[in-house]
Image 1 (cartoon, rainbow, N blue to C red):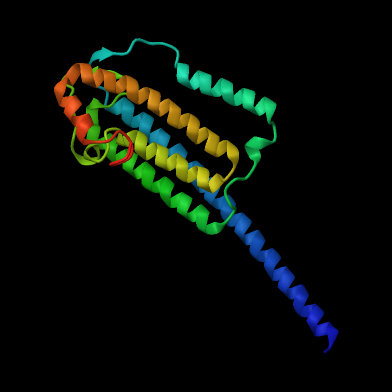
Image 2: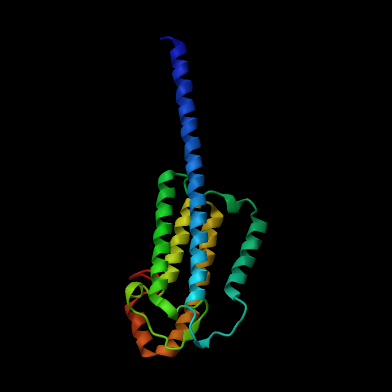
Length: 214
């Protein structure tokens, strides 16, 4: 066997593999940039919609420092100080299929949150609040889970964490979950005081975040 053609074929094979890896890296970077833009657009839309749908307030939680986020951030800073290399550790395989699935999950989660936000209408607020004429919404996405906005945003963050694939993204997801859980407890206390037995029955029939599970 002539060694020259074999060596040439091997070189071509290596170069093709290197090009494939380069193309994959470029596409993965594109997905990350795409998701960054999607999140910026989502939160911009969210804040604009909050401004446009303001309505009279009947009762609102008194202003105070958000204890859960402060504790979570403090723990995170301490963790980074003790384990400085861990946040960038990749814990999800760097594969195209996983990245595409993560992107689809992110888009689906954000779409679900937007649907819930529109369905809630003027009852929505950024902090635990009872509006004038507040209604207990039990239709649309609120028939699936009691807190579909949080469900959608958490699903979207989980999808983005899959695409990023590093430890810090998963840790951030857990912190966001803790913050959402704390807000849910406070908000549902307000709803229980306002709607009484109707809200108790709603809690029995519909789960908080995950249908039929949690």
